[in-house]
Image (tube, rainbow, N blue to C red; front, top):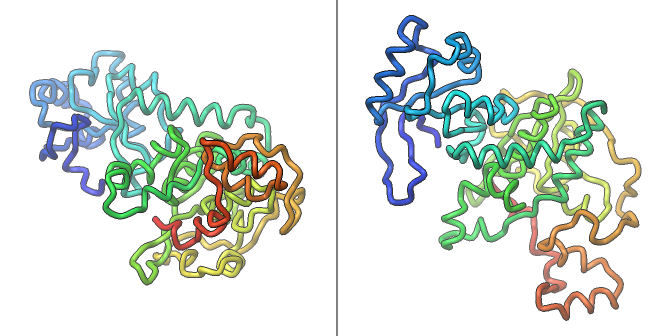
Length: 339
């Protein structure tokens, strides 16, 4: 959603309607109460509330409430407002990550609260660790939580149309564990924000098919690093060393065959001058001996099964719930993992 002057309701029977947008941060204090009263009378007026405006509303000591207005909270990261604070002021819709992800959508406060709760549980216990340790834990946990949603990039299917945006923002990756590259990047960015780590979404140049790839730039200390969870999550699940985690621009470009997917489409992105190795316990090119089903979701079992001894593989392939084929080795090509 690039045009904030038009909004779409959550009612599937409603059509897109032009609204008059009022940015609350542009309204002077002495006009604020009258402005809210007018918005209560006219539902075609939409109020946009930014993080600093929540502090501003606190000054009115409960005299102003937005519950009878068509208001939504607009923020860059999920860490900028707790659901209980939004509920206190009557904000019922939330728009997250609007700066960098054109697929973000307004969601109801309850859905926002569920998503934030799940991500807060994911970062639980990381408070006293260093930022490098926090990043490593989050990277591994998200790799085990989200699977690439190939069905979402099948053009023209009902599923792809319905999930076009949901697989590319927070909704499907967090609630269903399914997403495409923009969804991976958005979820990593928002999760890192909960532990105070700054991250950005970066889009690549378009390939010959007109598709581009999304990944992250992560700031640790005073330096920026490239990270591509979409291309790393299968390696992590198999106990292999991530190839695209916290890399310099040069190394990031050279460690993949599809170089175009890691060339940013703008020149103003932060430069990454060095790399960090966070996974010394992972042997390069060799599987780490881990419990096969530890932290692995059902949809990822076919990929894991390919590395099992024959007797285990046969028992899985005989199950009606899992269909394993050697062709799966190539079905997640980097060309499919596009925005």
